[in-house]
Image (cartoon, rainbow, N blue to C red; front, side, top):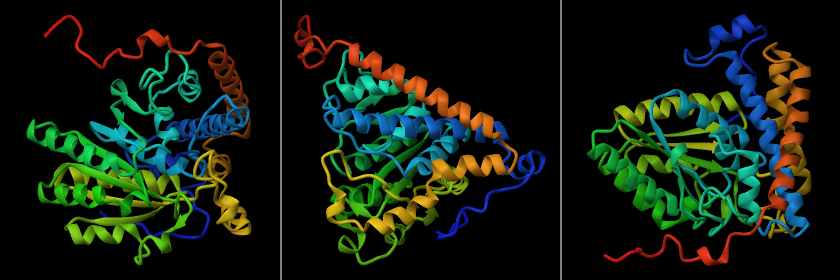
Length: 351
């Protein structure tokens, strides 16, 4: 693997014509893949904004926004989809990953509104918590760092069974301060497990800035203590996230674990229950928005001839149509039948 450095500059892009772009892309990618990423980014952002609005109307109890994290999630997911069998352990801020993996806007809104048909837990847990096995996703809870030990257990099982699946485990910088993170990374290193640890570092653990959590400037620096590689990536740059994850998957499958730290921005408060005006500088936050991947990446694709402005405009119109439909559908849906509250808890019909 080669280390990619974080940069404060706008991502440089990859080419100016469709032909030259195709020549410079990894073999498994085509320009059409990049256009699809534009569509996904716009749809996810539209959905995320609507969820936040529905919370303010009292119809969504709680949400953790992914705004600013989209490039990291979509870049890493596409790498997982293009580079062999992978299994995903996301965390509570990974809406973009889950939607791009195949979750529909209607399913998303059913989950956030806690309605009948919720796909992860039958509306028994927080939004989108549980399992989505058809899409190779497990997120059992929103307990900070809990997914790391679970993902390592999955990776161990794959190795024991001779399965070449690579596990991708997502977490925030706050989770890196939890004991489970040390246990998971140490165990993965000892057993050379096929796992890529992906830290979406938005520099805040709720309201606690990174400097108050740790003295190191990069979470990835900790990988050296476990004896495996750690890399720092500009998490606002889709292609950097794709390429780093692709190399991480290859390394994990052939050698062992990798830690990839993707530096991102969290444009919204920690959750809908948080008020980040108490601890974040407004001017710095607005300055960070100039690197918003949902604005930058589609603009780059238009500039470089991969997509047209008409396509991008159509993606925005279609996203609003889908989100409006999902909102109406979930709003009209019934709550889960209370008589099913004990389903899946006890064995039925004897021993």
